[in-house]
Image (cartoon, rainbow, N blue to C red; front, side, top):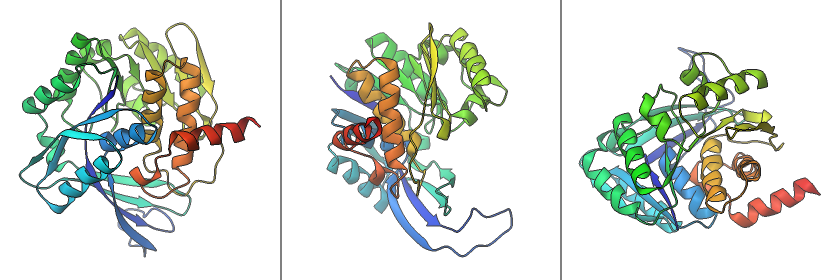
Length: 305
């Protein structure tokens, strides 16, 4: 019983600014730090922090970032035997965070762009006995699709976070058990902006018709709209004082995978994921912001009291 994450590992280079710069503008920042990140690694970290048996499959470079990225996950209890080292640089993300916690991010793939056939062989071994395969789009799309086929053949449920925003091949929809775009990513998939509940309902209907089993659209401070193929609802977000929204979606996806593995009904799984995402925004950094199961449970108790 485990969660396998197949995806990216990046070193985040984070600067804090009073506001995000306009094109051509130079601003003076207040702080800078590095922290382990990458959507795949972030989601693996979230799963492990929440107590799930978690295996990461991916690549890092043969630079100082690579060894640090592996060690960071290992220290959180993630099985990193599926993470190999490639010649060249590790992936990096250049992140600007403003005083309201909003961010802008530039990704340089590095080793993540080399993920391919040999990585699929390691993934095949990792999927034996697994419950869930959790993937994103920071590795080549054709590899994501091939991995989805493997998960389907093994009877492993696929949760796909279609981020960064991209169109998907038709086959990938039919292989996906649970699709979790945010509003921007959803717009890239359906071809129109998804900025209110009726549009979210329309978008979810389109995605379900393409073959996805269940859809969750992350709608920021409004919450998450879910459709399980039969019924739908908006699960409200929790109000917190955000300091850094980096990786809030990754905290959500990791927590969602953990909740689904525990057989929570979908609405409660989304509420659990909303709580993890909210907590993560109150802390700086990506992986350092991921909450433990005890923290999420305490937070939920405080919200229902």
